[in-house]
Length: 267
Length: 245
Image (cartoon, rainbow over all chains, first blue to last red; front, side, top):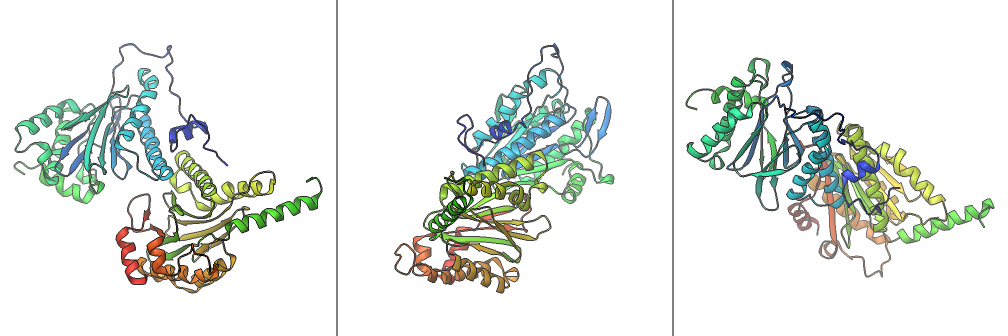
């Protein structure tokens, strides 16, 4: 039977449990492998911004390897727990694994400690993973640039955090975007927030979704690594909302209608 | 002292008596199916009888709280490592029991130099096809599977009687509300087997609601989330209290 007497492992610590069972990945820096002046490549566009009821998180569906389009149905917005989503840009293998570790980490904590992990704790958990991944990142093998969106049930507040590859987190009070298509849309988001009809945080769900669809369409116009919606093949961008009720992904059916109307002028 | 077989058997038998005596006052935890999932419930003077183990698995326990806690953590560790290394679909109650805690409990019980676990556990799962699976595990690692619900309690007579009633009641056709009412009635009936002059046990269901905690949770197939466990809400308990209390 397992014992919890190991003083180095704090109660409810899934990382500790993984380490004890020998399952943890170790991404130490190998000096012989490190590159100087490497470029971070993200073939993707994911974005998040605050709206009236919470946070909207959206992403395109394309996965690329260099100039090759590998996959058009990639889910880059991943549910972590009932109130948390992670949008990923960067190396999918590392990003998906991080999401998997976080999911288990939060659920293990909630079940074992019989309380939900604080939002601050959740934010740090992702920082910790990114920090431990620095070795892989500087070797050019596992750079991940995530957006973390969550709803704090205790304080009734939505939060967006953006991270650098070393694990520093930045609280975002309006909007953020990452990936190769993000430079195109960051300016639009800022413009919309300052000079649009309403600040982003005051927009309704419908307006927020419309804007997210338009932004992803625009990113795809200028960035070949960002995929466009392909209604004829039932491929739509991923759009999810995090509110007091938890996360909700828009269904393909909803997106089919919204893509149609959103891309018309004046709607 | 234990090199002679009969001494070892005697020691094991003494341990059975010791654990059973310690468990004697353990209040029943019942688990039954209802029309859209599984209900698990029990009254106790303090909370800590019913727990979530994994996405589709819940635990109810009778016995020493520290022992229930150790086994709960063991189950949690096993389930989460399996779910992480393979898939949530590979985390099944039968595997956790058969290859996890049952052999370990048996070994622990028969190693007579070690303190035995003072527990009786009820484990329940709503599998991915929506079928409920009920298991009962004893302090010595012996476990049994049930199709239509089961009960654990410190008193053997209570277990036998409530088990028979569960068997005879069409719980799977009941709504959650009705299943809660009926399990409360079964719990109420079980009280007659406990010592009448024991002041610590509530004399009526109303007293149980007022003085003790009703812990109840469901594994509901109606939920879209991966984790289907939820505690029965205060509103649902208040409604139950007004109908049966």
